[in-house]
Amino acid sequence: MTRMYARSTTIHGDRRSVAAATAFIRDEVVPEVAAMAGCTGLSLLAGSGSGTCIVTTSWLDEGAMHASREGVAAPAARTAEILGGRPELQEWEIAAMHRVPESRHGARSRVTWLRTGPDAVDRAVDAVRLSLMPKLDDLPGFCSVSVVVRRSEGLTVATVSYDSQANLERAREGAREFQEAVAPALGIEVLDSAEFDVPIAHLRVPETT
Image (tube, rainbow, N blue to C red; front, side):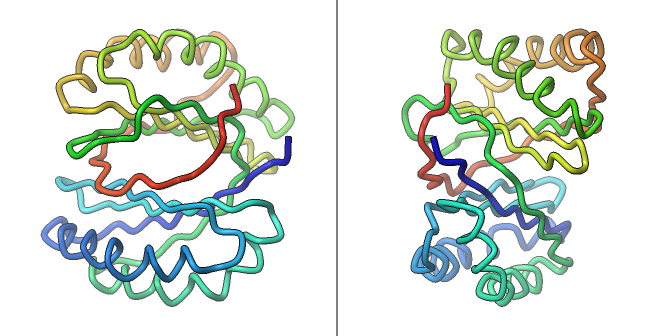
């Protein structure tokens, strides 16, 4: 199967501007980016308490992602201006994707950043696929899980979404077990974990499980 790619734009901004930024992304950025060649969707993770927002676009292949760099710069800058922060753009390979029904209004995500040696990225991906994914379908409100990687830096990011804050909290013990027991036992460093609202979820990436 052809590898797909993603670009994340992270902005640490003013939490009071998250609603305005969300409206701008939905009304202005989504149609602009969707019209770019090779784009297969956009999602937004919004930290209403922290002010941190992560906009992720997905692309058919690495060439399409690279060709879009200039085109996405202006929307990213305008979004950052609304939030009062600076855009940090990173490009990723999509290593795994599994979803059930589309995320509904009120969906919440837990994002976990992991690090290994560059030659051990597949170990981190397999840890999520084999240790975490099989359990997710049975959890109340599970919506999706995605795994993206930057192999040259040994970075892996896993995002798991649920249909409500209550169901996110119900799954917290399993997430803690993965972060505190499973990952360290495999030599995987957990760099950070954070929770976000999911006001926009339109990444059209095929299943990889």
